[in-house]
Length: 468
Image 1 (cartoon, rainbow, N blue to C red):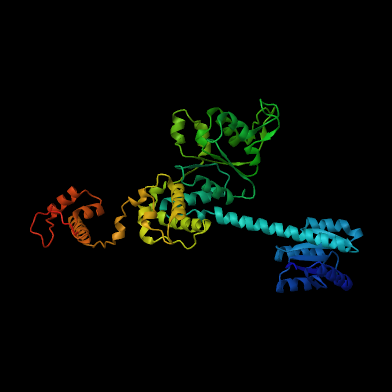
Image 2: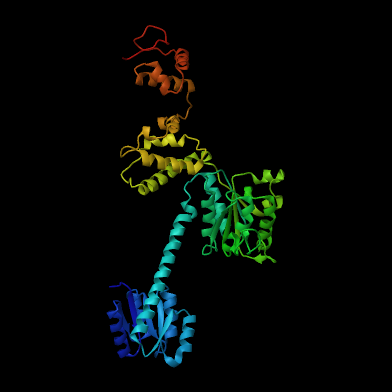
């Protein structure tokens, strides 16, 4: 039994009853109304997926009812009943927003076919809405993790740029999320319902890149056995994302410049250029301005690309965002690998914050995934972290030092830290030095400097004490 609800509207009572019975036998939940105003009242009390209404009714016509439904209940599909001689009027109703029409007298097979087709269309619209919603969830600017000042400033610029067709150049180190930002710009723009097409200029051999980008005609070169549509044509109406634009050959850059300036493409072997309507977003980890000054990149293309320049900061410059990113990836990846009961203790967070992350966000995500897959227990332990993370010293914040307003002596802090470390390890200097990440010789020097001796010792400050 389907959960779809149908409302049949007609001033002919016998037709209403016959239609109701036929649709209920097909498994639908059906209600009836004798007029347009009655139908609107019922729809105000309970939602309906489909309304089947007569085109001509006294008082409120089917067209008037259609307009009210489209205005007040836009998620409801409408199908028209019409007499055989009024098909032209039904076609006009479809132009006004009706999905289909059914001619009288009504045949059961035609009725169920049109109803099924209408509800299938409704299902498709719902799937598109859900897909669009999921894209919003995935590619909204608010879903780019982090709240550091540099990132928020960048996202504000990107959000404003997305409302225009201006060319955008995204620069940043490998792993900083350039493609994610490009998708956010596209899916928040007026082109969001059109294609987002990516081409990695550094991953395609130079002799094939032109054909991949612009396409070719049959016989234009050896091996061109058929016409090929290029990435640019595939992006028509939408956005073309040129990733690693700095790797593009100079001879091809002039064609990209023409594409941006005039919307023209030169398909390999074609006698005349074609036209497209696209927005270009480019990205690179290289310094294009320096390349342009050295003659390795066209200066005119650089300025065309960088109408809106967006510089993604490396993760080492926004370490304040690491805890939030860490939590996001840990939650996502433990679900992916079926380890929902695995936890990450807060005491380990400083090891992640204090690392420089040369591979940026991508490296952080990969490390978190490795930890989740290889962790032995239900809680991540220090030994589950990669060795290079374990060797990072936790930042001073973890000591919870309260800095007095009148100032503080750095010498006094150093002396206190050394005393605490020595007491912690029962005055074993080797262990205390390892804990403080200094050599034993350096520790002995600082003990001598501060006059630190074991309380029950009469010997020199450098004497080793072994608790064993």
